[in-house]
Image 1: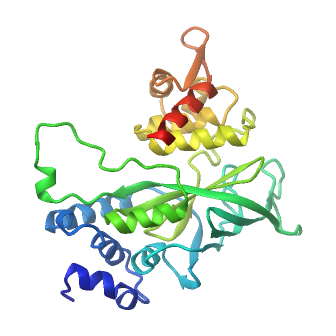
Image 2 (image 1 turned 90 degrees about the horizontal axis):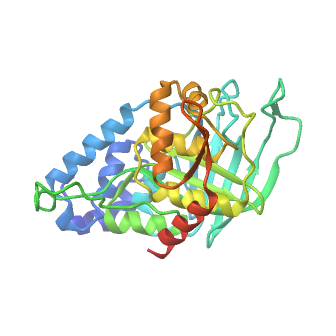
Image 3 (image 1 turned 135 degrees about the vertical axis):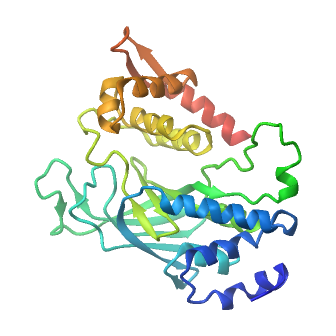
Length: 329
């Protein structure tokens, strides 16, 4: 089907009805962006990033389906391509892998966005320290939540001309993810043609925060990398402001994957050492020490003790200051 960009945008709601091929849906989203940014080079690069993400190792805990503005979608990519704006959203978590470790995930039935960032969470009871863990006899827990999110894996369109403006210059961050309302995220994706492969959705109550990493290519909820690996004994209880500050910094700060995982581990722990981190992440002590030192060098960690048993803890004041700067940027 050879359509101009304008024809593609206008016809998206009908020609994508029932479409389930994630690559085709990603191509449709890409072509919502400015015409000058979406050339053959951008199409090839998007496909390359798509295939790289699809081939990366990920463990799904549940499949997900969506109700967007009253219409059911098996893929959020399809909804992004078809729906001009986000007014309300329902995320249904189906076929949970009950034999998997959920210690760092939240067994959930539905997450509903009712508008203006507010919603309702329906979750199951789960006790990591119980033999049964899942308590199916108890009623669902229903909580009012504030919902925010950020795009964690994506392709941002660049034409061959924009990429070759200065071949000697350092790579630019074309898009800096931010912790924002899903409505704003929706508008940004459709306005730029940025293709999201994975997003993190955060649901906040007055006292707790629940996170959901959603693989949009496979329509799945992903397992936290710490599940079954990192012990719960030193898990920290944080206040809601701490969670908001951390999520704001995590969303926007450019870190290598190993450093980001160390950052997450550190925030969720009262304290941590390099040997502890090495065991939970299946890496060497030196790699763990380097990752923790990278977090410390950014000012996000406090270090005490002497080598090789330095003890690291999160620097909440530095997180708060960094979050304020990011929000005002």
